[in-house]
Image 1 (spheres, rainbow, N blue to C red):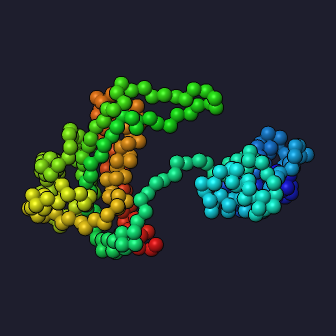
Image 2: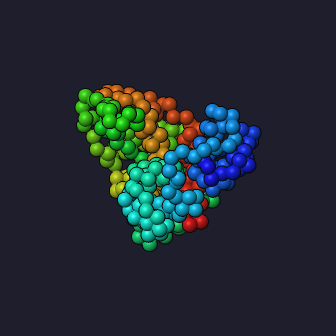
Image 3: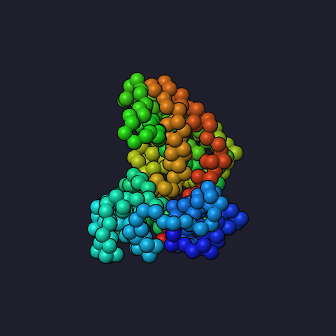
Length: 319
């Protein structure tokens, strides 16, 4: 805090108190960390004084310019450990810092640990297929699309985020049967949704039965519809192709490994979070949580997920 002049500190306080700017925005404007801004504001709120007072303790190992370089190092290598970063700081910035110091500065810069997302790498042909798909369908009426998929929910994955003090026992969610699971099928479209739990393995016969019983009744007043489904064999048997033709549904030519184009995938994510919050302990409670979630999800949320598909297509086209 001591490297700011009294004028600079006053400006920071006014930007926060008078203008209501976010701390992150002020930090970017003054090229410092949000933690530094918080210290200035905290000192002002506690003492009513603008000046920073006498500095206590050792001076900072890294100045603002050094912090910018550290930020760049982390951005370029987000999986680097604090040990690796400390070595990089020594080589790039020519300053020796401890591993704990790097850990502190990394948090001061706003970095937090997250589970790395794992995605399948795509061949050039698969990438081209996504591009052609997006170019073909980006100007269609997305409100005439219906999206279908199946989802397996396991009680083993119903734990949620819980906070605990360092060194204390980690909170545990106890269940009656760790192998309990439930399967659900669904179709979502602009202004509508149908979901149904099922037992056993999905096959072409069951798939057609579900579509006929729960989805077909919604087709009477709808025309020129597109239908999005995965490219698995049971979806495209001769019997299924005949059913789609009889119900005047145009099948969408779906590229491989493209869940991002299926709006119901985002619905499953919403439903998963809902079920986790219910903390089911057995199969009955798991199924009840799923059913409640299917009823609870607002149609407005589903509609937003459907519109999001156009955004995904646009990102592919612009890439």
